[in-house]
Length: 251
Image (cartoon, rainbow, N blue to C red):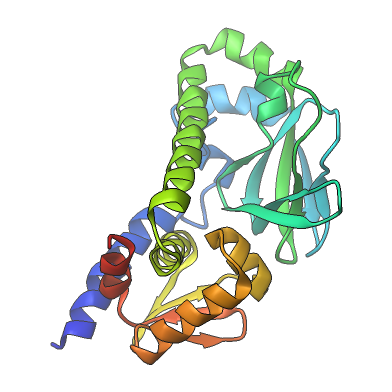
């Protein structure tokens, strides 16, 4: 078996471990809010959720909103974006099935309005909304679940700190390699030749996710393509040598 086959097999195992939620299971039960709760306990709160199925481009919540609810992403993909006073748009993060969105106003109700908007990236995405009062009433009965939520918030803080560190200490190709690895772990689809990563981002959005100019990111992508590590097909990146990207992200 050649090196590429070895790389693909090991990387496929990583993708399955991180990205896969069995389709027959309720995605809500896989979120940090419920995954340590007994099914009978979860059922007490699931009845309070309001579910919505949304098309691509729909807005779940907007920057400046004053609501006090959080969202659980059951199906699809959502991006968080922020608009500057001069109306420039910055992509902050991407979220997939089983993740929590917009939780900050729930746990920090005196912190002001929402600081970002959540926009649906794929058709037929499904989200469930949960009001703050319903959540806290349930947590009063099941306080140990609050620890899981604290872990989610701590994880977000750690990721933000790491992103700031990356911007200071890593060059653009290393940050791009790390971004592609992250997208592949969360959304990658293994196939015979490697990994197919449908990111559905414009060139500008991918550059924003990396934290660099579009021109600089495109130059790094071209370099990766010339090295045969990846190829590009529309808004999909095909990764042939994930090990090479991992090594480049550590340089």
